[in-house]
Image (cartoon, rainbow, N blue to C red; front, side, top):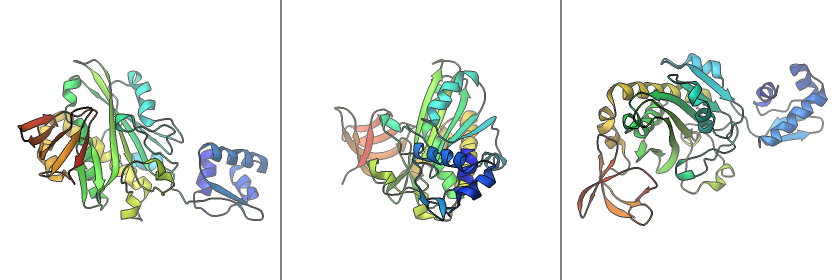
Length: 318
């Protein structure tokens, strides 16, 4: 019932308790009980005597059937959740029961969304894209080399299809626009090191964030609505998931090598001097692309060095 109520209120206009009750086929008291659940989801709404109830912001709820109908690639299951701790955690717990399947989950809100290095991913209700995809691989962990970069490329390609230009990639797997972070990626692996394994590919894409939503983001950020205010959230979700499935298909058949040059052409720091920040061992050098494993090539005063993704950050030299 809560989903139906949100659908009625999603236009941001006032609706009386009587009107909502008639549409839902319940009493006004039952409507009030459902409205209290909005507090648990941190969805701001107003109640005005004589007018009724309205959400503070118009929202576009995700429509699983609409998204599924726009997917051209194989997808065995698509689930849209109202609220979850983390889409990655949700799929990771289900992985063992879905070996060989491609299982995607999207959520309206994450209570404990996660980014790289254990950071929080800000995940307010009904505003952004929180997507995780479960994929099985037969070659063990070695078969996954470069997958995080390929995922970033899939996001960039989706944005190009949506008419978003001047998007760049930042090693190992961030997406930037106008010099600010637009999306992030988190991959988590389960299974055998040298045999069958499964990967949960998580993508967080900022679509619409207010300054209040973003108070806890500790770096420059942007959102798609700042660039293209007319974008449909469902269209973004559909194109993003389809491009991810296309990229995974290509990666499983050919590996990372076919993406290598594409990445370098879109790397926002290509041929620029950067500092690699890591615990107790910072490095300074010029970015010279990536190798066939997706590792960063950095030209330092010692020559060409290979940087492996881990607990590190890449920052430009001011």
